[in-house]
Length: 289
Image (cartoon, rainbow, N blue to C red; front, side, top):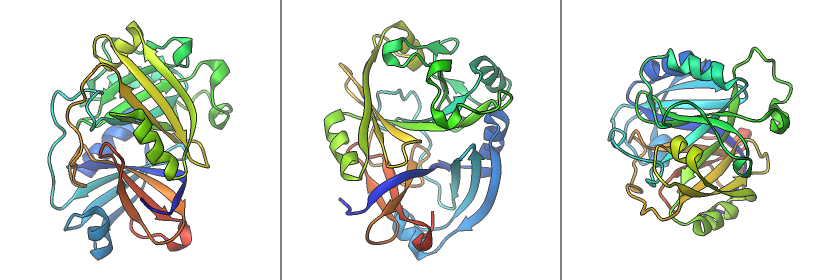
C-alpha cells in the first residue's frame, strides 16, 4: 500500500480499440466535448501501466469531469460477453442528467449501445435514494449509468445547472466487490471516507441490473473533494464470477485516476477485486496520465 493520499477523483480512463469512434459515441449520446488528442509513450508510461508500446489518447469533458480514452498500440482482450454487475470486473460511472426522459431519448437515438436495464429507466425507492436510473453498455461493452436525482436531492454542485443542459457531469464510479469490508479498508487507507451506505433490493433494482432477486449492499466512499466519489457494489447471495487479472490494455480495464498528496510520482494500484487505480502527484509533479 502507498503512503500517498487521494484528494480528488480527477479522471475516468477507459481502454478502447478505437478512440475516435468511441469518442464520437460519447459526443452523440451524452454531449461530451473533445478537449485534447495526444500520443502517449515512453518508459514512464510503460512502467506505470505495465504495458509495452504507446497509446493514442482522446480526452473528453463532461461538465467538470474528464473521460480519457486510451487506444493501445498493442491491444488486449475484448470485454467478456454475458458479464453481469455481480462479476468482479464490473465497473461503471454514473452520468448526472437533468431530464431522464430526454437523456434516455437521446441515447436511444444513438447507434451502438446495448441495455443492461430491462425496459425503461427505473425509479429506486427512497431507501435507495429515490433516484431514477438506467444502465447500459457503450459499443465496446463498458458499463455506464444515467442518473437523475429527485428535485429535492440534487447535489449542490449541479443545483443551479441550466435546464437546457441535459448531461451535467459524473457523480461516481461504482465497482463490484466480493467483500465490502475488505474493500472499504483498502479505500480508507487511500484517504477516502465512508459517506453513505444502503441495501438495495426490490423489483426496480432487479430491472435496473437485469438480474433476478437482486440484493446489493452499496457503500459510498469519498475523497477530500467528494464529487465524484467511489461506490462499492457487493451483491448478496451471488457467487461473483469473472474478476481480477485485467491488463491495462484489456477493454474491461477502467482506471480511476486520483490526484494525491504524498511521496513519489504516479503509482498504479489494484484494489482487492482487481480494479485499477492511479494515484498521481498534484499538478507540479505529474507524470503521464
